[in-house]
View (cartoon, one colour):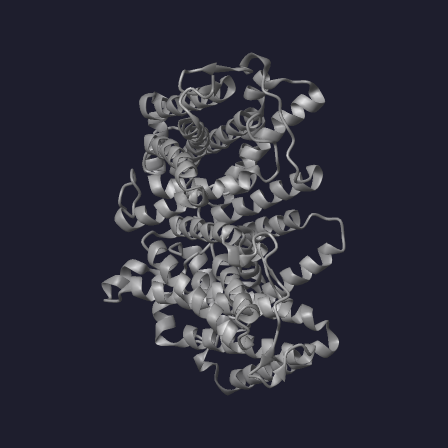
Length: 295
Length: 340
């Protein structure tokens, strides 16, 4: 049933699906980065590490506590979010008065510690995480075979992304958040506790990374280095999209994932650098990024 | 860096350590002390291979030059590049290839590596200076990751193995660099040449304009300086010198490998500079020596190196932003003012 359209079309759709899945992770991660950057003016270098911690939390819960995929989908982001809140409270909050680059350097150090620690305890070989029973198997779409779990990942991350967009752009809390991004002092004068909002934003942003980690665990293997290679690409995605808009981050993430998949079919050698080449082109034509505002 | 607290810390540290305007009325005594310190430093460097393991000191010198080149950008122009490994490692590959496959003279090989890094710096710099601050850091990081993937895939780099067994060769066809002492003094000469160039740059009118851009770019623009060009030139210079360090390192270890182009390497040079003291001339040297020593020490223990490096990063950013040399200079400077 898989050879309905012949090999090339099959390979094309397969790679496009893979690209779409990668794109979902780019979108989830760059969304978290954009939310954090908007509120804290910090580029969270530890984002990839938190993604890895999310995957590991799910794996550890399954191995040692017998907690399965569905509870982990909720619990692991919670654990990662709490970790982020502790980090923000104890360290990041001391740096807001300084140059923004110090936030980048601090989270870089944290990323090294997290990744180095997990590598020390678990080694570099990947640990498999089983696909939950409900999502095994797949659908024959006529032109291609779609594994259920992969379809679920794309849908779940789209729902989360759009939910975040709705919460920020369309709700009262989101309005406070946007207002505090523009002018924290004024918002605080209106009696809104801005420091708590900042902490919660950071917690939420890294929880998104943790959620992406759990979603990724059954597809890629759980590996201490899974986040560090991803984060650099996500940075490029953020530069391409510009951090001005939430929808921009989502669209750019998905689009670049698809494009990467397409490159794998057309010219596989370039697939690992295509995102960076596009970043260079965007910088030449529209330095503020596709959805960014010129400042 | 636009922020006032950090920049004033950086610039006060800079003026304290460097013979700059602030120290100018310090007169003859300061000058004698400075010359004495330089003589002392040079003789220590000359005597080092007799006391310490030469390869270790050469490694320190290569990384010290690398960190000094990086510091030229962050410390004096306020630009945080997170992709300097591309220049360091890229030049290492070019130098190794020139020395091994083309059989060129070691000095010429290093020169080729330096030139390659400078050209790469021109391309990266032209792209990266289109954005500022955090974006600048992210762009340089992403571009250097591209070099990493190219190094992984291109045939001449040897993929995971790197280029091994690079011959050190005969310098100018006369001096056999396989003798450890000859190699050491050659590396020392390269380091000193780079260091003096940075020292001259920092104290030239060009260096002053860079500092002005760091303190307040908008004002520098309004004074009629084309800040883009200054930043680009500083970037190219920094990239080329980082390349010189990388090329030299390839000859010292007779190896060019993927380790040199990873973003962890870019992070390491940031740490060396931060730990030693951003915006001080000697800070990166001290920081590089410290980090290399730490690496050697940790290799003998079971402690995971990245965790320790990361922890130092965190501590430096939180409570030790002046760095070792910056802190010393700050103490030395504030003491006489209390006496007065």
